[in-house]
Length: 262
Image 1 (tube, rainbow, N blue to C red):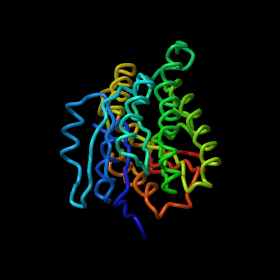
Image 2 (cartoon, rainbow, N blue to C red; image 1 turned 45 degrees about the vertical axis):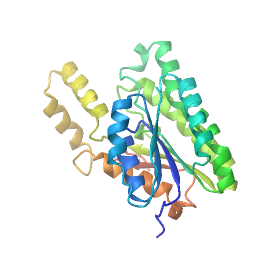
Image 3 (cartoon, rainbow, N blue to C red; image 1 turned 180 degrees about the vertical axis):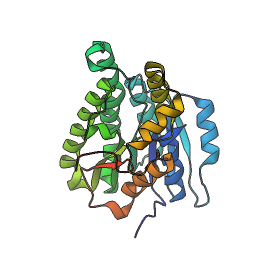
Image 4 (cartoon, helix red, strand yellow; image 1 turned 90 degrees about the vertical axis):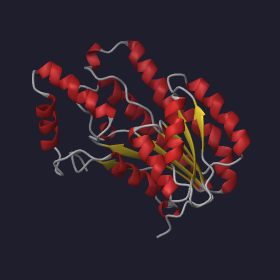
């Protein structure tokens, strides 16, 4: 099986923590040169030092805030003019705040739309010329299992994640002819800052302890545990590899079996 990513360049968004960081580390282990993208330069510098470089990779980073998609787009396009190549794009950023959809302000939808779909779209447009020239492209979106089954208490997120999934499938249909695949990785409950915030919110509302909330959530998962970020990263890394060339337009749950639908 060909998992070798030597001489490949990957842009990894939201790569200073959680799943994004784990993906960057995994792709580097497979030989890719990594461009980290996040808003905190100090954290970017620290992650940069952790990336594997034993295969001659050249890693760098871009400082940009995903709450401002036009800033991200400009910063990445400037860097791409210097690099003149990119083979893998991992779209990843923090999810919208939780809460019932009936209580959500219009502004929450607009902010989430910009942070997720608009960022994904602009970055994809930026990398396409380089992927087409290389006849190799992997666009991987870290989304959520709510694409398949909406999650209670995450109204805005459910809505925007569904829009991203539809956008990605349309892109996959259009770009497959160029050797470019577009796939979504759908994490379930994963040990990240996001899940910690969800647990704390549910604990406050229910009067349960955080541990009790976590145990209740884990009981709904056939694997009876949350994922580690590295387990989600492994799925993304496979989809980035030459071995996954004929996998296109899929939504891949990495959730320990929790999602109830096929």
